[in-house]
Amino acid sequence: MFQQNFFRIIIIFFTLNVLFVSCATKKDKSEVSDVDWSKMYQIINNVKEPVFKNKVYLVTDFGAVADGSFDNTLVFKKAIQSCSQNGGGIVSVPFGKYFTGPIHLEDNVNFHLEDGAEVLFSTNPKDYPIVHTSFEGMELMNYSPLIYAYNKKNVAVTGKGVLNGQANETNWWPWKGSTSEGSFYGFKEGQPSQKDKLNLPALMDMAQTDVPVEKRVFGEGHYLRPNFFEPFGCTNVLIKDVKIINAPFWVLHPMKSTNVIVDGVTVQSHGPNNDGCDPEYSKNVIIKNCIFNTGDDCIAIKAGRDNEGRKVGIKSENIVVQKCKMIDGHGGVVIGSEMSAGVQNVFVEDCKMDSPNLDRVIRIKSNSRRGGTVDGVYVRNIEVGQVKEAVLKVNMFYAIYGDQTGNFIPKVKNIFLENITVKNGGKYGVWAKGYESDPIENIILKDVIIEKVENKYLLENVKNIQFINTKINGTLVESPNN
Image (tube, rainbow, N blue to C red; front, top):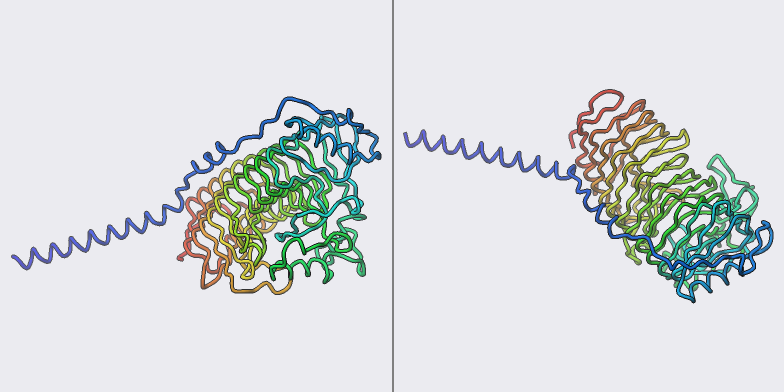
């Protein structure tokens, strides 16, 4: 009897132990799919629009002329400085076309374009002074951005007007030196470009070998295009309602900035590297109610390139994207490829994406020279019409500048997609390739419906990918063994 009871106790013990382990395993897996969206609301509640004095400085009172040819550069500068020196307010640009060089914002200034106002920026590089700026994840001394704020507080660009960079195939764009993208952007073989060894390659070498920024002097003769709007090292930044067209390079580039709101902005620019919005080394950034129709990524979250990114070490984090529309672009919401300092807490919701020229919905890209960690990309309530290549693409072997291999294996984990509907999914539902030594971890698709896609997924070195109530081409997808 004793022996019988002993064996019963042993059996009960092992049964309970198996059940406990099983439940714990299930809990561990499900924890990834239980996203705490309260973090997003916390970010939103903590980021407030800057407030400006209700005092208006009309640029026409300072001598501005709206004939499309008079150079208003000094007029705008005088109005902005007068506004800031008197405690701030609104520098207002009335109806009409205003030609200008770069616009430099000062503390507590809202540069406001009234309905029907259009600012036409010079395409003459000589009109742009050399300032501390950034190019593709590397700091340098280069042409001023078209609109620039350096270490300022409470700055804004608002209104229903148009900011026109006037870039095209005859200026700025040919500097890319495009020879293999299908569009040459006006470049012809033999012309100088950023690819020449004393230009972008030289900057890459300087960044990799820690040459001080003040000695990285480029500008004339080096063909590195300026960003359009760059708040550099700023706090409390707002860009609202304006339309931006024909940019030389990246369009909106919050750099080392905190508390940034991009609201109701339309970006329509199909030049090379015409990313719509690129927060870099930036924290607490809200991008909402915007339309992106671009020649590159619609939104691309950055965090520095290679050695320099690791040295700066400022993550881009707490990025919220809401109620935006993505049309043409290499990706709807993208992280990388310059992401060496890391990206954390990206929230995307209630967006619409649709175009035969939209390549991916969500994209993460890096390589073993770049490295970096991406932790936490949370996406929900997305309507996709047509996308060309993939709904989700995670590429840890991205390279466009020759050999991009090194000893810095990128880390990507915790990607969550929920309530996504895709009418035409292109080639892949999910395309994800990681490293055997450090696989991509925790990809969850929950309540996702993808139609008209060629392949459910292509996976290499992915640990814990789950398809929860997810249908591809009308069939419920089982989670692969991983």
